[in-house]
Length: 99
Length: 173
Image 1 (spheres, rainbow over the protein chains, first blue to last red):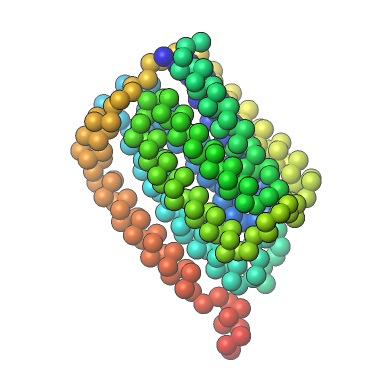
Image 2 (spheres, chains in turn purple, green):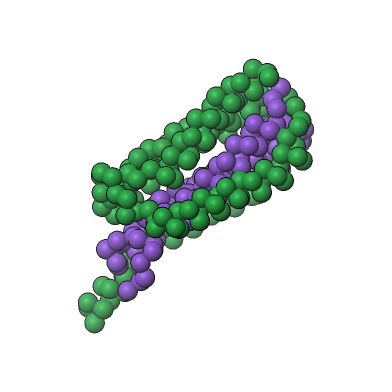
């Protein structure tokens, strides 16, 4: 037995920390870390609901597995874009205008 | 308070603290390492919630692969090793980001907690067989589609990293 407010509070904190990271950071890789935190908050919400709801399709857990895979694919493409940006500009500071 | 409550409280506290540290630390490599702690303890949270398969996939894919990708990107973009405050934005933007982050947390909590927070439920632990049956039964076509997505992402990453950049084109012109 588990009180549902515990995982739900953790979801809220993770989304808040992730959005702070997306807005406050200037390095593109650090912005991506914020995006990962938001994605993981969504995963935690999926797992929580999948664990406590009596769903015959196991939607919560299966969608979490899918989301982890999609996040890995997104990460690969995003890092390729960041490396292309670095080769073009010589830095990955998002607050400076492009050439 | 049940045993699961106490366990989740302890692990969740580490997760929340390391997530906040990952977005606030001034050392680039430390941010990636705090991300490892966050993702690892989150796998612990999944374990406590009774999702063993998801916890193992989280460890394999996130802690094993994604974090290595992040560290590679930090190395390849010549991240400085020591403290580098220039990677955070101006104080005014950081304050605004903190306000927005706290606002999003409050808004989400105001929606989720009154709706579901008061409930006490039992988790469905040890259900890997049920998940596997559904994953390769009802969800098999989305699953196959996902492998196509991974292939497309792989090719896209290769194409993007081989693409000539505008500055290189200017040099050759």
